[in-house]
Structures are given as C-alpha cells and as structure tokens.
Image 1 (cartoon, rainbow, N blue to C red):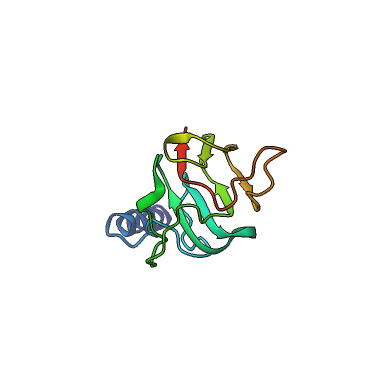
Image 2 (image 1 turned 90 degrees about the horizontal axis):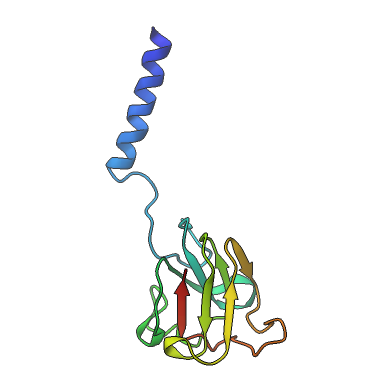
Length: 133
C-alpha cells in the first residue's frame, strides 16, 4: 500500500510541475539549442551549427522582418546550417515566396553546410523563405 501511494504521489507531483510551468519551456532556441524544442526546424548563422540560432515551428514565406533571438540583426540571407527536428520535409528558398535556388531538408536530418547543395546552386547565406510540410 505504501509503495502504491508513493508512486501515485510521484506521478501527481510530476504532473503538477508541468501544469505549474516548472517543465522546460518550448520556444525560440538560443545559440546552442538550449532547451531544444521537439518538432522545430533550427537555423544557424554559421557553418557547423555555430553562431546565433532560431527555431521555426511553422512556415515563413518572407524572412525579411525576422531577427535573430536576442539580437537586432536580421536572419534573412544569414544562415549557413540547419537541423530539422520535425517529421516533415522543409523547403528553403533564396527568394521570398519560394523562388530562386532551393534546398530541401529531409525529416529528422541536419546539414552543417548549406553551401554544399548536391550540385545545385548554393543557398548559404541566401535563404529568405522556409516552408515546413
């Protein structure tokens, strides 16, 4: 009886922690993916997942007004590597609304160098469009 009560109390305590906001928050990632959000698409300012980072959980067809989290600098045309933690294909394009050079990130994959685009034009520091799904 004591063991069942202790297990039940532990489950209630863990559930209350999540409800009360004690669980890790989901939101925009910071450099190094602190508190990485499952189901998000991450973009990095520099090669090899270095520099500033940001996460996307939905498409954005024009990155012109997007800033790196905690910064006043635009992430438009300023990303060099990506991590896809989603179960969807993610299309990156050079032009707003999907035109120009493109790159497709497979589900649950990563690319440390957007300049290497399997013989297609590079999208390194050229991405202005992200379509998830």
